[in-house]
Length: 345
Image 1: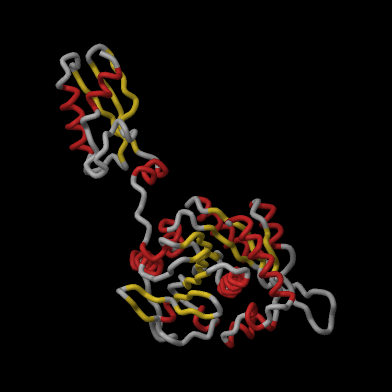
Image 2: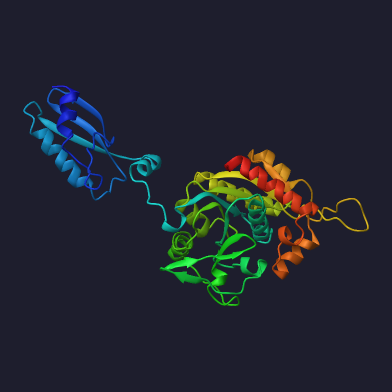
């Protein structure tokens, strides 16, 4: 009796969902034969898999029918995450089937201007001829509608949410589904469910990029995005001061653990230019983004100044890339967008 005879017999043991032989899909491994004793490994998602008892029983049955086999011992081992996802790929969420690239704008700390960067980077990508969507995934404090001057509620068509179109972007935000002054209270599994709805139940259509504005921190929304979009790229936002850098380091650690690619860092509020001086005033310190880039080996894509026109754009619903597209600050956003395209296109 040899290994080929054992494998031939095991061809009859099929995975009940995949309808394929466990041998052919690599779930039976490490076959060993000593006299009439056969030992092998059965790779499952976990040792508590409901298939464990059924499959072991079938393996013992087909091998026990061979006259040369005196005993069968099956050891259960665990599939790696990569192996499991290869065998059982998730069906793509319906709404994002035609989206080519995902870019999540993230930060470990609030108040660093993450939404401002997300909005203007999305507009910069659109100005370079790409079809771009903008998802406000900040389930706790959605502010994209204010920054883009949108007060109308979202409509539905065929049980799917229809994005609002403005400034060449397809836009969806929780702030467009309820009164802007209402509090959003999301806990635990509800957060993940809402994120999946914003991705899968929206008619995003054909997009080159879907830019996702994440809430600050490393909580449920960031984890939900990582699980739903394993090929999502991350753009990290910081300010120069150390307290912001410390939080961003933690967020970088999260995305490294979940396997996301961080395309780069952007340092916001980097400096202020006064009419009374030609020298930049570094209100929040100096060189924090550059230090973090060197420390993490993540490229620094650009440094955005504290500019009055950025604040005004956020307040009046006309972002900088629309109100002052030829300004020096707009040129920085265009450079950041081009670097993102180089890394993801």
